[in-house]
Length: 388
Image (cartoon, rainbow, N blue to C red):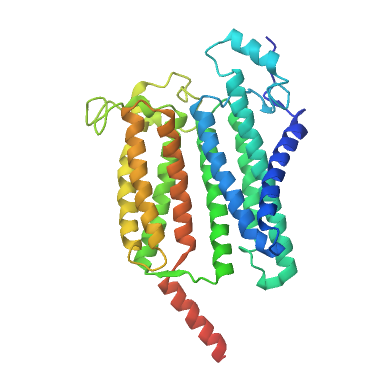
């Protein structure tokens, strides 16, 4: 069987065309719902639509990884040099016959290519959003009902970086560090779009930011940072297939402190299943990866629980408080289910979706609030300017 080059750009334009058609269908649906509004009023619906589809893309990316479909097409951006698995049918059949239990099957190829089509469509929508934001700003000046001058540009740059990580995921054969960074990049994209959606909604409604004391603001940012670290650890667990290193809870391997190799488990730059020196990754290293994720989960649950309790007493942030409380309960339930039920696909997808929802919820909370100390300082500066 002839080896397929890792990068084959011949179907690039066809793949981009499919993604553009998906984006056009989404835009057409939005136009039907928003056709009676002024163009400047389209920004928030377009942002929310892009945010929704990006969330779906993150979930479908998790589905692609969890079904071992990441190498369903071993080249990028197409499938054996074709724009779809239809044209690559003979090559896929040959690869599947040579290795029936391998990563290439017709079903996995379709899953991988649908993920690429969706990613391309989201990229097109983000490009449209950036152009629309700047056109609105130039048309209305400083009174433009936008989310800020540079947020859409930053989102466009980031989605291009995320696309590069998607290509590296395939060409570097599911290199754990790259796959984990790709997951984190997807969640960062959600946060960027969530920030824009909140700012647009607040500007259009005239709703002020909720005032929080400095201690609550610090807790909010600390919880967000801890959540980011926990998501990275969760990605490291998933990409190293360490979920089933412990199949009981709260103990692991019937022990409170099983054998663990932290040094090998957290060697970041290495191939899947191997240590940096090329040896097979020992089971104790996978146990260490799993166990650290558990420890950090306890810390994050406490931080988020305390934050939800504090937010419940702040007008304008009570909805966020309830949502955070429900999401951490969901994450605890799905995390335990992954362990004791043998990592079922539904629980694994729900766990990833819960993490993405928590990132969005904390983004919403941060954007919808401000420190009372900062607000007082800005008021004093404004008063000084007026008196001068």
